[in-house]
Length: 205
Image (cartoon, rainbow, N blue to C red; front, side):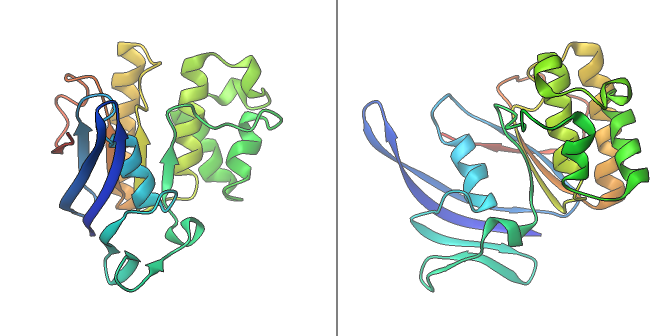
C-alpha cells in the first residue's frame, strides 16, 4: 500500500499554485491520473519516485516511510525500487534493446519474456536510434518492469502506440501486474485510455 499526503508549490503561468494530494493506492491496483497540462501530474510521479521532494507531508510504502518533511526523512530513489516510464523514454543511446533490460536484471527468462511482450524480440540488438517511437516507448515500459517493481509509475506510456498495439500491450500488462503484485499509477491525457480496465481514478488540478 502506498499512502501519500503531500504538498508542493508549483510555478504556473499566473504565479504559484499549490499541489495538494492525499490518497492511498492499494497493492496490485491500477490508477489513471488525469488533469490539465501543467497541473503537476508528472511532478507527482517524480515526488513518489524520490526525484523531486515535496514541500510538506509524508509518503509511506507499507510500513516504510519514504518521505517525511517533519522528520527531514527522504529515502533515496534507488532504495525505493520503483519502476518509472518517463514521458521522453530516457533511453541510453549506446545500449541495445537487450542491454537495457540486462542493465536491470540478469534473469534471462524474464528478459526474453519482456522482449516478447514488448514485441521487441527481433530488435534485441538494435539501439534506440534504430527504433520507431512506438518501439522506444515499449522498450521504456519493459525496462521499468525488468526489476519486477511493486510500484510502477508511468507518464503517458502509450502515447506513441496505435490502438491495436496499445490494446494488446495493456492486456499483457494487466497479467504482469497481477502476477507481480504491482501497483501502477498511469498519467494519461486520453480520456478513453484504460477504458475496460478495472482501475481507480485520480484527477489533479
